[in-house]
Structures are given as C-alpha cells and as structure tokens.
Image (cartoon, rainbow, N blue to C red; front, side, top):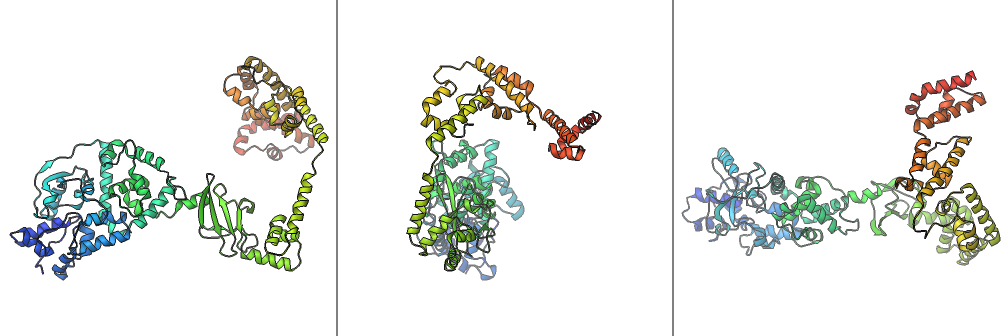
Length: 625
C-alpha cells in the first residue's frame, strides 16, 4: 500500500496527479512508479486510463479517494457520458477500473484515437500556470486544456499553448514541470474568439457536471423535443435536415466551423449523423455545436426541463377535454396525454382517449382544444359508455330520432351504430339511403331554373351597367355557372362583352367609365336611409367592381384615384355624418338626448370625445329649427 498520495487539484487530469506522486515518492525510475500504481511496467493513457481501481486499493482508506471520484473529476469520461449509450458507458467504466483490461478504452467508447486526439502535444494556459503557482505553489496539467478543440481558456480568454511534450511519450515518462511552448495558437478575430470561449465554457461545464447526467438515451430525448419545438423535426420524428444544416451554417459561419472540421462543401453534414445515429458514437465536439445552437449553452440544454413542448404547441397544453356529451366529464380536461401523432396532407393528427368513457377521437392541428365543438373532431370509437347508453335506450323501445337527440349525434350516425351493434337489420339502412336518394332526386325543373337564372342575371346587369363579367361572377350566386353550362347561347348575348383576346386594355376609356359608375354608386350610398361609410370596400361591393383596388394599386386609373381621394370619407367625416343622421332620427322620434345618441352611433369614447362639441352644436341646431 502507498504511504501517501497527492490530493488532486481542481480539473487536474490523472496523469498530472501521477506525475506529482512520482516526483515526491523518491522513485528513481518510471518503472517503479508504474508498478506502485498499476502493477505494470507501462503507464496508462492520458484521456481514459485503465486500472484506476488498483490505485484505489493502494491508497490509504482514510484519504477517501475512490475510483469513481478519479473517473468523475480527473478523466474526460464526464465529457463523453451524455453522448454514449448506457451499455457502452458501463463497459468503458469497467475497463477504466479494471487493471487487467487490454485495448484502447477510447476505441471501446466508440471514438477512434487518431480522430479524437488531434493534438500531438500536452497543452496549457500561461495565465492558469501563474494562478496555480500563486494558489497551490505549483502548476499542473488541466483536463480542459488537453481537449484538442479547446483553443481559448474560458477563464482568462487567452490562447491555449502546446508544450514540447509528445502525448505518445507519456506512458514512459512523467513530466511534472511544464516546459516552454513550441507552438502558439494563431490569433482569431473578436467574433471567433467569443465563440471559441463559449464553446470552451460548454466543455468545462460538461467536465464538471457530465458524470451527474444520463447517457445518450436521455440526451436523445432532449434533442427530439428541442428539434420539434424549433420546427427542425416533424412530430412523426422525421428531421428537416436541409433546413437545420442551413441554420447551423448561418449561426456559426464557415470560418468557425472549419476550425472543428465541421464544414463540408458549404454544408454541415455532421448534423445528419447526430440526428440519425442510434448506437453509433459521434465526436463530443459536434454534439456541443448542436447543443449550443439549440439551447444556447450546455447547461441550459441539460438543466432546463424540455418536456415535450412540441406535442402541446400544436394541440394546446394538457389536460385535453373529453368530447363525449353523455360523459360526466364532457368538455373537462381529463385526458392527460396524446396517444399518437400522425402527419397527413401537411397537417398533424392527434389521437385522444377519454379514460372515463372510452371515446377515441382525432383532432387536426388547425383545430385547437379550445374549440370544443364535437363536429370538428373525427370519432374513431364512441366508447363503452356510449354503447351502454345506446343499448339501454334501444331496449327501452325508444325511436332512432329520440336516441339521436339524447346522445347528441345525428340520425344517420345513430342508425348506423344500431345496425352495427345488431339492434336493427341492415335493410333499415338501405331503406334510409333510398329515401335520401329520392329526396335528392327531386330537383327544380330545368325551365324553372332557367327562368330564375335569367331573371337574376338581367337584374345584376341592370344594377351594375358598367361591371365586367368577373365583377358579376362574385354577385351572381351560381347563376353565372349554370347559364354558362346550360344556356350558353343566351348568356353570351346578354352578358357584358368579353375583353379577353383584345390584346391590351384601353385603360383611359376604363378610367372614364369607372368615374361615371362611381358617381352613381356614391350618390346611392348617400341617399340610403341608414348611412354607410363611403369607403373603398363599400364602393367596390355596391358597384360590383371587384378588381378596383388592384387596378388602383397598379396606377392605371389616375382619374379614378383622384376622384376617390376627393370623395372617400375619413373616419372623422364618417363619424360626423353618422352623428347628424342620429340627431335627425332621434329628433323625429322625440327621444333626442346625448345618451341615446351615443348608443345609436356606436362610436367608442376615444373617438367620440373630440366630436363632443360638434355633437352639441348639431343637437342645438336641430332644437332651434
């Protein structure tokens, strides 16, 4: 058993602790230290060393240094844990504890050593060395600095430097003193430096907290919820890879992504491996890039409760209402969750099951839970309570019409259910269908239909003499289509001349025609018993010129535009005209007072207050007359 063992410093990697033990133990050779620690002639790797359990057995028990503590605080396992499956993670832990384990633990973790370890040298931050010496009296190797993609120290915002110590030599040597640097990290712009510092902060947070998190199975659930809530994944689980890749590119930029080998021919193909990998392991760097994009930081990604917001975003928050009117919990929120979500024709359909009556119904995304109208849902199964009530009423000898009123469903739905449950023979449905067809077959005679459509069409033309065919179409109530299909010869003789095929429109002539028509229309509106505001929409509706606003916007009707500018009423002018009309009406009825006037004109207090003096003058003028 060892006579002593150094106390680990914050974020100190296990190799650094072993270096300090070697220096203070008085061992002359590296071989002796390796035998003390692992009972082997060779040391262990830097990132995921094996045989940690043996060190625990050699350390005095009073010190309370355990293998679990070393793995959590002095190796990079916490960085990997949220991104590997539980089975793989437990295998890695067993190998790290077992002194007899053979093979690369990093490879067992699912990461190729040459891809994960991109730097060949030990690394350090100069400012951290100075701080460590001031606080502890010596410097040491930090876990965070050895991660290849951490290029900026998150604590000081200074670059990470490479020391003249090859990683491949660590199993045969212990380097306690940090030598001079051999290569300086190139400088970055302020924008890139800020992003690198944020990324390093995420790595640091995971190293300190990753061991408390779940394995990739839990991380995958958070991914799924966030991707759906941010509309990068359908509720069915299919991801919108193209859209997500473009968003990642825009969020990080090419220069930043190239530092992590995360830029590939103008896109981010690595995100597909994350979205669709089940048991495969991806480099933690890519996960952290995705995490910061989705949640802002690793801490908010893992700490904030992302509880399936997407299912509820489309259908409202649970609980959901029961839509069975005979259920004692009708329209009350008793359904705690959505059973399934499917996607069809661009819309999501959710399935709900009431636990009290057994009704199963479907709802589309365009109909939210607040709209509790049974006609807006699709019933998949009426449920046991509905069937029990139906059976009770049928046995009692009630008619189908009576049952439909009691159960609040239409006659034919109840009739079908009575046949389905064996209460009525199938011939009953056939008789009902025959009766329905007979009713439908009783159409209006063709001659009567022709006379009605012709009269309606001639009336429209007389009241809208300058309107075009397209203007009359919206006002014809189906007569246009019937005449075109059944009386086309008469229709062409009595319809406005078609302007198709004339090459170009004579806009100057149309401008003059519109002015004449609008003069007549405005006069009619002013002469109406109950006033209407002379607005563009009112004029379009009364004149039948449905394309007027479109043509005005194109600038083709300058005279018409000038005429409308002079004659259209502003809100104030309209309110004044309505007040004068209200004063006249109430004066004739002998009921003129301010309270009744405000009721009849329907003007808000905010709009009425500036017109109060005008109203008093109008009332006084009528009183004098």
